[in-house]
Image 1 (cartoon, protein in one colour):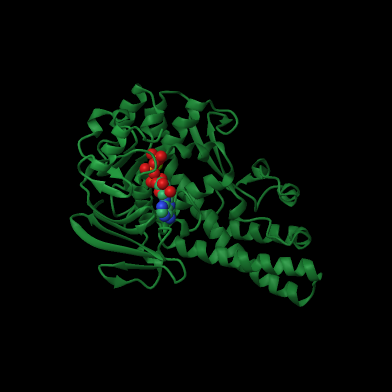
Image 2 (cartoon, rainbow, N blue to C red):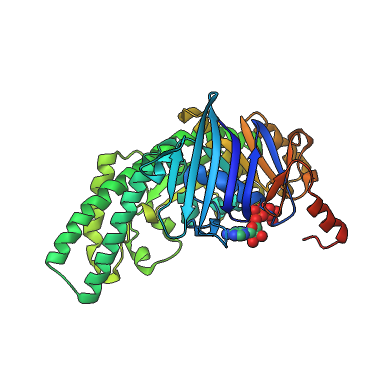
Length: 408
Ligand SMILES: Nc1ncnc2c1ncn2[C@@H]1O[C@H](COP(=O)(O)OP(=O)(O)OP(=O)(O)O)[C@@H](O)[C@H]1O
Ligand SMILES: [Mg+2]
């Protein structure tokens, strides 16, 4: 699939921008802070209804506006669809396809698939579990859009259960309040095990692609692997109770477990830790506490791999995501976004990455300095200046450049 047309209204620093894109490589060039990442963030929002930079959507609405509009024409197998998403500060956000209102915002998922690669991706391999959960969940939602509903059901149950636990702790409630807790336990285990199963399934499908991608990037014999580890197993309670940020070592692999087994184990564990949860006033297990374990050979990537290996692993995850979406969805090649990636690479890696992305149906590349981007990717540059996009380097930008007040 590809995007043929994108228009942004009151989105971030865009007052009103309208641009036609083409299949193949689209290069966005502009100095720092002009709106390159904002533009790809809008594309990303159409595909996962989340920003890759912030939690929540409010920062995406222009600071002087009460709402923002992202509008795009997506082309799948030569058929066009007009997609619109409205973000509102105070009212409910809305989505439309071909001018028809969708009952739920999330009904727009599955139409625009995308994969973004950015320097912050190193966080996926190096930093806390939430980065890895987001990585897998964003793919789950793109491969099986109905999971957006499961995530939202789970979040709702988790919130209600937490507030019940919190008030039970404050009031030292027992008896009937605890009967309500049993009901929430059942929903938590039901939706939670669905999510864990989906992550397992997704990682199972992704892994062969990661193996292939890692070989093509790193030319090393180290075998990459990914394990899904969960708090519904294992001896995590002590650590969760202490709210230790790195409780991942205490999680256990759920590989090979069926949905029914996951749900059963979830129940057993909830019963075991009920007292702790009541003392703590918080849900202590579930997919919101789980993690992925990335390994190269026998060693974890986090804490052991070199900087170069970590970078290669992160890139392999993204390239594998492209292959996975191509294989598992009806929309074919996802849109591939490379945000600010080339500046970080040496010449050899630049060329290699260019070769790897060149054949994707549509690619967006952002760069502050066009010289950082290999020549084969420079066919069609767009110039981004202060929330405006043009096919010519803008007069405003040039004036500023010659007057010597450009950013670093
Ligand atoms: N809600 C908003 N309203 C108005 N302006 C915003 C809003 N959110 C972000 N901006 C502005 O957008 C600019 C950032 O744009 P963006 O991140 O797209 O830059 P960029 O071109 O990717 O730069 P870099 O090359 O440094 O990555 C900042 O100047 C910021 O102040
Ligand atoms: Mg940027």
